[in-house]
Image (tube, rainbow, N blue to C red):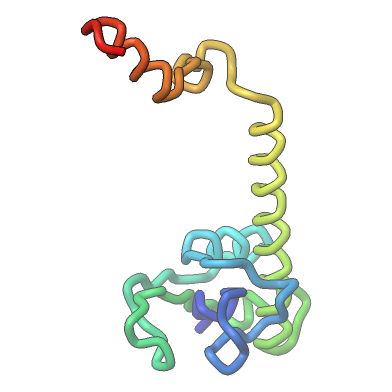
Length: 138
């Protein structure tokens, strides 16, 4: 069983994080975890949603049930801790790539034809001055 909370960088080790900070991301979800495991070659896994870890009973984070034989063979590890470190590294790298793509698209600016992003909205001062002129007030 691999819980989502094992990879949450907002948690301390005492609160349930089981991988290092450089292998964890803030607020991970089950889909990200499953994608990271699948990208490593782990095929035999089952997603269990809306289950809470005994240490965090109010969070319905969910967990993956992974075949240990398949996971150890695909990743070349021989313990659960090493497996979690490898999955965490994959999760962190995909998180960093997504973050970098988002920054690049933001720096590039709005796409051609994206009228809502290209619109030039005027500030509230302009609107209030127009209103005053329209009704004859100073």
